[in-house]
Structures are given as C-alpha cells and as structure tokens.
Amino acid sequence: MNKSSQYENYKLDKELIELLEDSDVEFEMFFQTPDQIEKYFESLEERSLFLISNTKEIEQMFENIRHTYQETKNKLNEQVTNKKKIKADLEKNVKVKI
Image 1 (spheres, helix red, strand yellow):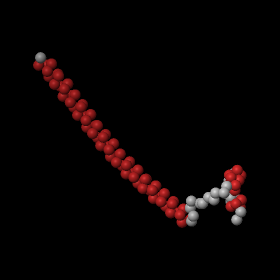
Image 2 (cartoon, rainbow, N blue to C red):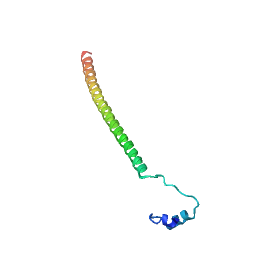
Image 3 (cartoon, rainbow, N blue to C red):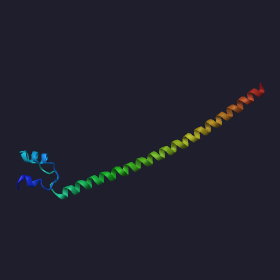
C-alpha cells in the first residue's frame, strides 16, 4: 500500500499529507481495535457518571448546610430582637424608678 492512498480517506490538508509522506517515521494508531475504543468510552462514561453522582451528593450536602445556616441565622436574629426588647423595657423601668 503506498502512503498517499493511506491518507486518501481522511480530510487532511495537502501540506500535512506531504509532511506525512516525506517522514520516515511510522505513526501507530492509538487504538488498535474497535474493542479498545469501546472500552475507553465505557471508562469515560463510568467516570462521568461517578462525577455526576458525586456532584449531586455535594449539592445535597450544600443545600442541607445552607438550610441549617438559614435556620440558625433566623433563630439568632429572633433572639437578638427579643434581647433588644428586654433591654429597652429594662431601660424604661430604670428611668421610671429614677
């Protein structure tokens, strides 16, 4: 098989074809069989699904933390408001007695 026919089926720039033809280096395909490609894509899919699952778990944890933070903030704000009321009432009582 001559080298030029080897590249005919690919949409390659003429300069690239010339470079490939002039080169003494033989390039090997990364994937040798279709099975290798399939296994590679399966591996990518598994990793993607794992990352998606982890992301969902982290989002749920974040939502729980956000909810807890908001509840705590609301309770503390309510306590501050109550303490301010008590302080104001005490100041009134002190002024009345003086």
